[in-house]
Length: 87
Image (cartoon, rainbow, N blue to C red; front, side, top):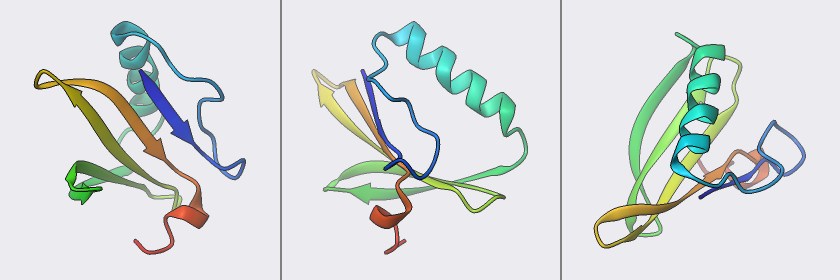
């Protein structure tokens, strides 16, 4: 399951994306759209590993993950610039 928060200010999925294949397809599409324009770094989010993604256009995303039995159960993305000011 993928949950995203764009805060109405940047593009984000409006409803949760369900299932491995659907989450994979969404990310393949986004990566292809922004090929060569993204940088990645790792950070801790609420005490767990996360990913900070920045685009050349200044849009940024923070990914955090929920785990069950050592597998990713849910992905949370925040792209709302108001929630990412501290980065």
